[in-house]
Image 1 (spheres, rainbow, N blue to C red):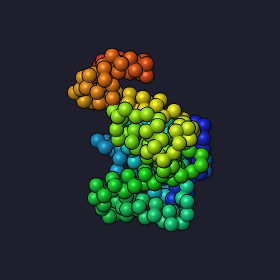
Image 2 (cartoon, rainbow, N blue to C red; image 1 turned 90 degrees about the vertical axis):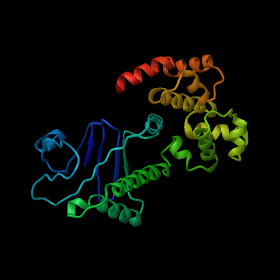
Image 3 (cartoon, rainbow, N blue to C red; image 1 turned 30 degrees about the vertical axis):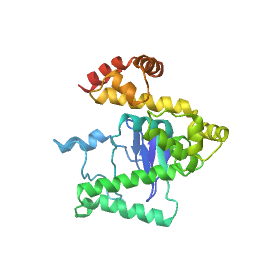
Image 4 (cartoon, helix red, strand yellow; image 1 turned 90 degrees about the horizontal axis):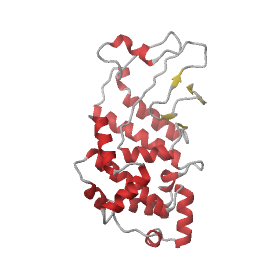
Length: 260
């Protein structure tokens, strides 16, 4: 059982659960057993407070749980945050999917059974499970945003163009042609799926690209402005302040002070 402050999910073999970082949650069986805090579980491990193999419990049926975390760049993390719920539980679509997840999980957790798997191989297998979770969610009727858009040929093409060439002088007409749709149909469908009009989404994407450049690279405001399609720094600074509520210089100082 996966429990958060507002939801409860019953998990069975083959299920995948994706949780937003920092979300308070508990994993337990349906019995009245006391839930033990992670800090308490790892307290006896000394110099290695987390990660690796940990055995815990009594004489009940053995269950193997695997957990992994993902570090994403700010732009990708922001896209996921706007497209995914706090807790995403994906059930296996069919027995084939369940078997694939089960065998992949067994390889990742092979240390439990006395075997060894190369860490690089394990990392790629975890990536595959992560992508399977996103793909399964994107193919459901309940989802929206850019994940859903990737399943739609026309909107997906336009979205990829915006991400590949954020500095280009895009117009709704050009994007509609690339999507093989009429201007009006494209604009309406893009807004319905993504939740933002095409040009608003482009500005949003440009601002996040620029914000990441300023926070992590040795680039000037002029460089960032040029990289996302602004001909003058003044227009870029105005747009950046309108989007984030601070200037590019203020954003750079804050981001670098936080990481320093």
